[in-house]
Image (cartoon, rainbow, N blue to C red; front, side):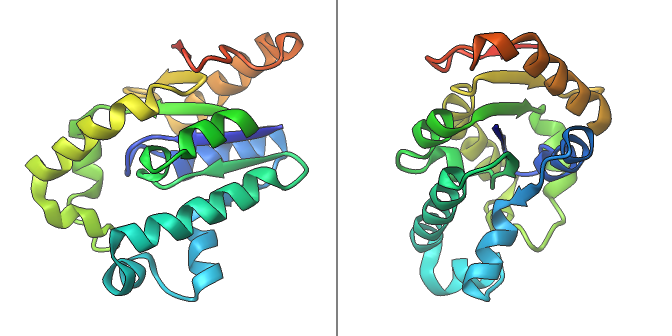
Length: 181
């Protein structure tokens, strides 16, 4: 089984992914880290040399490549991955997608001073607009987890409990009309 964590930058995908990896014994694949390994460049360097469109093309290719590999795993995507091209459809077709729904104010507090996040240059209002644009893609996830006030461990346990409840049913909500918890 593959589990793909989606959500805006700073929503906790990598952190929750590590917790899920520990609970389930699945390897964790951080999409941004895989891109850096493949290209030999940091994310800001890729944005600078190829622009966002060039970065998104590489990201889509690395995402699809890893979703199609055999075996179980957890993929923590970048915040924009589900909103590019057909990525959300590919994610939902080849994995159990989980949207880590985190309030914008919490996200902004986490990311506003992080120099490794090129899109922070847009400022608070620009980032909020981007958040609003991406939300409809995130909401296509098979499971939506409200993250406010929960530790990464609690969120991971909640995801595992939803997976256990639906083991016999295969994937929850194949149309992408995810549960909300």
